[in-house]
Image 1 (cartoon, rainbow, N blue to C red):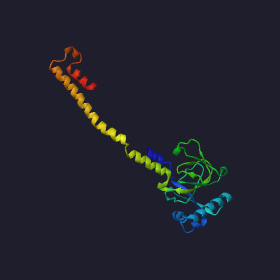
Image 2: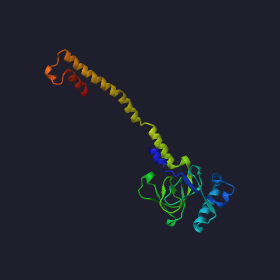
Image 3: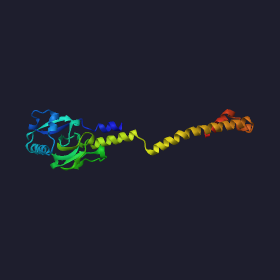
Image 4: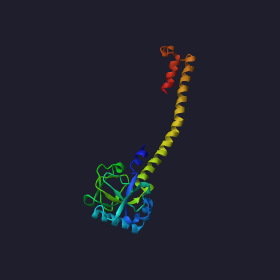
Length: 219
């Protein structure tokens, strides 16, 4: 179904960036929750910048979590060929001179990858076509554009347009009315035949019954 196809666009897991110190004594969920607020968001951005400059160092760790556990403000790593797990803004691209190219065809129908610059909005479910990028989460869970489309499709499938209600109303009465008229036409001609009001040559080939039935069918 359309809803199932849309849900398949959502990445099941996401990789978030966490300062190494934030992991001490915390599990993945607690660490993600501990990084909320303006100060933590700044720390995440600094960690991403350090990583871009220092390769695998940079004083942070990558933590894989379920997409459902993402929270606003998380900094998410999206590697080349992966789907963006949430709505957000492009924080940094580690290739292509700081630019990113996202395939949005499954949501917008745009055939060519769309170029994104730092600060541009990105949509969950789109595919990263370049090297690793960092996305700052702004819409997670039910607040993503993809989930909004899913809700609209479900509402459309579960409801009828006003014109459809009118069509159902008319058809519920029109079909029985046509059947009644067809039966009445056959009976009318049967009465005429029994009264001898119809010349015999009119029905001598097909017989009286078929002759009357044809008038009902023609209705």
